[in-house]
Image (cartoon, rainbow, N blue to C red; front, side, top):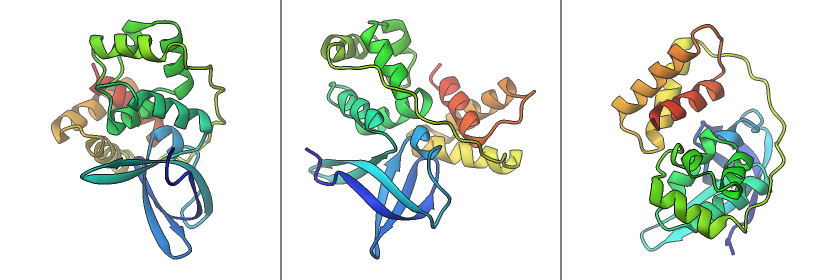
Length: 202
C-alpha cells in the first residue's frame, strides 16, 4: 500500500509532467501524466490528487492522478517486469487509461507495442499478467484551454518530453512531426504533446 494516498492543498506550480502541491507550508513534488495535467485547476487554486508513493533504495517519488482508474492502471503497469514508473507515466500521457486497459483486455499485442517503451515481450507479459485484472475505465471529463503561442508551446512541449526521458533531439523531432500533422489546426499544448509522444514512439 502507498504510504501517501492523496494530497490536498494549493497548486503552487504545474507543468505537463509535474506539479508542486503546498500542504500547510510543505511543498510536495509530484510527477503527473498529461491526462492528469488536463484536469488541473489554475496555479494557486485548491487541488486534490490521488498519489502513489514509489520507493526504491536510491530514491523516492510521488506520482499523482486525477482519477482512481488512472492510478489503478499505473499500479498494474509498474507491476510488470520491464515497466518502470517513468515508462508508465509516459504511456498514460499519450493514451487514456481506459484505452490501455482495453488493449490488455483484448490481448491487443500490436496496440501495446505501439506504446512508448513497450516491446513485444513486454506486451506479451502485460497481457498474460494483467488481462484478468483490468477493468474498463470510464472516460473522465475533458477540459478546454486557451491556445498558447506556437513558439512558447513548442518549447514547453520539448521540455515536457525531455523530462519523460527522451533526448532533446528526439523530442524536437517528435514535436516538429506533431506540428506538421496538426498544421491545419490550432492545437492546445495537451493535443500537441499527445501527437508528439505518438510520433516519438514510432
